[in-house]
Image (tube, rainbow, N blue to C red; front, side):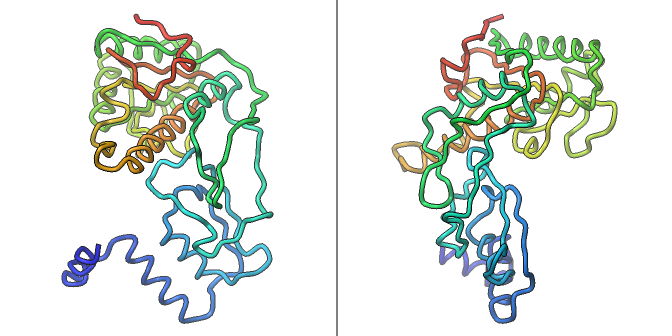
Length: 294
């Protein structure tokens, strides 16, 4: 790390983290800039970003209001708030009612994280046990296929069915783990006469297709999560080999589980989950009770 930072200094280059550190240094040498700060998606901030927030606001009553869910952490940022000067002990509140998705989708998605020791950012562990939804709908459609062509053909048929039932194209989302698969999905849907657009553009009148990471913070009436196969989720490049570092390996797998959880819970009413060949090991047997090999 010291060598890397020296090279940055020699090249007069900055990373997002070093910019944060410099900002902290400047703020700590002057009076705090704000009385109150509101933080959303708190689980995805890095230690340096938290120190920047702490330096920007003076400690006091209602100084920092934060909202987050460590079950939705999709980046490799594990933080103890106490270590960065943010005290939430005895001041936190857990929300148990999900207003976005149906009970059926929530129940299925929660199985993806069953038994995972998710930290609570305050030295303990969090749980989604007791989380509920009062909305009802169909169970997720979970399907495996022999080939990728079969999988994409079923996706196109499903999307066409949603459109024919009156679901607006802009209320339909498709999530995939890789940019390569996003492009394949867009090609397959386009060949079936279904207009699509990248999530970054989100044009009206078109089905939104993007990576699982880009799904964060969004929601769709109907959602397809595709390519959830053994070779794609998790991708080998995203996982540290266990023989190299067991803790990093476990942390990487948990991050991928959380990412899949985030993608699936973007669905409000209907969820389709598909793969070809073998299913992802992140899909527990109890969560694929409705799976069918088509």
